Image (cartoon, rainbow, N blue to C red; front, side, top):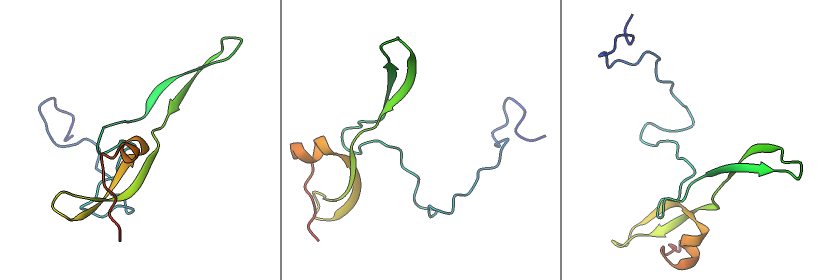
Length: 92
């Protein structure tokens, strides 16, 4: 069976095609493209000390950014990067 040998590089499971994304685009994670801020994990701790898992998501905004060469590009950027002036918004 292909994909079961230790040195075999063929995947054991076929890669599934996601119709939502064209071939040249990849689904993006919740990560700021400038500073790298991403989801952090921790715990909710109640007064009775019941511990449950939780996540904190970064506040990402998809904006058109003006690049140094004058072109505009869509990026997912956190609000701290927008507020601190690390990026210039492209006016359409």
